[in-house]
Amino acid sequence: MSTRPELHMSTSDPKPVAQTPHAFAGGGWRPFNEQLSSPSVSTIRLITWNIDAQAQGGPLRMAGALRYLEGLINTFPRELPLVIFFQEMVRNDLVLLQAAPWVRARFALTDTDTIHWKAPYYGTTTLVDRRLPLARVFRAFYKDTQMDRDGLYVDIATKPSAPNKRILRFCNTHLESLDATPPIRPTQLAEASQYLHSTSIHAGILAGDLNAIEPLDRTLHATHDLKDAYLEAGGKEDSHDGYTWGYQSYAELRERFGYHRLDKVLFCGRVKVKGLQRIGVGVKVDEAKRVKMRSFGALEFVTDHYGLMADVVVVE
Image (cartoon, rainbow, N blue to C red; front, top):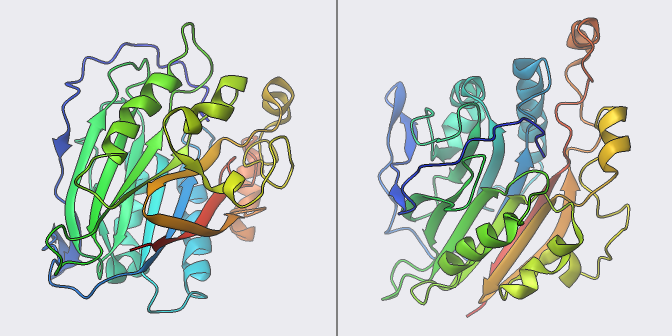
C-alpha cells in the first residue's frame, strides 16, 4: 500500500526503458543469455507479493519472506516454471535476493541494483525462471504519478519456434497509493493496458499492488478490457476471502483504511488464469528474531500484504 508521502511529480521520460536481466554464473551475476531456443511453454506459475518497505526490521522481514517462498516453491512440481513479482523492494532486499542460493540456482533477475528505479526509496523487481525464453524486459514510467510509479514488463516467448513466438507479456506494477483529485490510478492502468493489448503479443498479465481503495477501482479492469482473476473465479467484492491487506497491519492503519483487496491479477488475450490463491498468510520473521522486532515496536509479520499465486495457462 505505502503511506509514505513521496509527493514529487515525476519528470521521467515516459518512453519504455530497456533492461538487461542477470543470472548467477561463474561466481557472479552476469547478463542473462535469453533462452529463445527453449521448448514451448503452456503453463507458468505467477507469484506476486508486496514486501512492506516502510516497516522496521526490513532485512529480518525480507529474510523471512525468502525462507517462506523457498519452502513454498519446494512443494511445486519441478517442471513448472515460475515468475515472481515483488513490490516495495529496497536496496538491501536486492542484496538478499542475490545472495539466496535458491534464487541463484533458478532465476534471472530484472534488477540487481536500483539504477532503473525513479522513486528515491523503493521499486519493483521480477524473478524469471531461467528455463523460460525471455524475449524482452523493459520498464515504462507512468506519465501521471506523484510517487514515480511504473510498470515493469517481461516478455516471455512461450513458443520460440513460432513466427510470433507466442509472447506472454507480464507486467509487475505498484499503482499510486491513497486517493487523489483527480484520480491517478485510472490513467496509470490505462497506460499499462495499452502495452498489454499490443497486437504483437499473445496475451497480457498484470499483477501487483493495485491500491484498490476506492469504489472507482472496482471497475477499472473492465474499463480497459481486462479480466480480474479473482472475480472470474467467482470471488465477490467485500469478502474476507479476497482481502489482501489489513490483517497484518498496524491497528491504527487498519482502523483508518479498513480491509482491502489491494493486490490483484488482471489479464487479457489468449490465456486463462487458474487456481488463484493468497499466500504469505500469517508468515512472521524467524522465532529467534521476534524479540528483536518487538523491542523496537515492530509487528512480527514479514509484510502487511498477503501475496497472490496463480497459474497462467496459454490458450491457442
